[in-house]
Image (tube, rainbow, N blue to C red):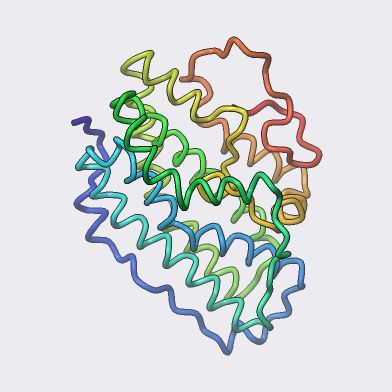
Length: 269
C-alpha cells in the first residue's frame, strides 16, 4: 500500500456536514439568470460525486483500502457541496432546468455506465492491475482542480450569502484536491508503467468538467460563461496541467484545444 503525507483518518473526522444557507439573505440578492445557470451546472457536477465514486470502486482501485476509506468520506462531502448549491438556488429564484437534449455520444456513454461498466470494468482493470489506480487518481486530481477553477471563475459575480457559500465550497475542496494530487504524483513518479497509464487516462477523449465522462446538456453554454475572461481561461489551463510535468511525453501530436474552452490557446494534458 502506498502512503503519502495526507492523513486520511483526520480527513474523516473533519466536518463534512450540510452547509447551511441563509435563505432570507440569499433571496435578497439579485443574481442574474446566467449566473444562476452557471451555479446550477456546477451543482449538477458536484451532486454526482456518488457516480464518480462508483466508477472508481467498480475497478481494481477498490483493492486499495486507504483510497476506499477516503472515497467513502469524499463522496458524502461532495454531495454536501452540491446540496448547498441546490439550497442557494432554491432561495434565489425558480428551479433551473438544463436542456433535455443530449448528444448521441453522451447517451451512449450513459448506457455504458449503467449496463456494461459494472460487468466489464472489474475484468479489464484486474488484467491491468495496480497502474489503474494511478489513472483514477490522475483523473480525480485534475477534475477537483478544474472544479476549483470553475468556482473561482464565478466568485467575482457573487456577493453576500452566495459568495460565502462558494468560498466555503472552495475551502472544503482544498482537502480532496490535495489528496488526489498527492496520490497521483506519488504513483506517476514511482514507475513508468503507472505514468503511462495516467497519461492514457488523461487522454484526448476525457474532459474534467464532466461526470464520469458524460457531458452535461448545458455544458457548452456553461463553459463559455464560466471561462469568459482570459484570466479564467488561464486559471483553468493551470488547473488541468497540474500533472503535466510528471507525465511521459506522448508520441501523438499535441492536442491544441484540449477542453474546447472558447478563446483558450495554451496546451493542456
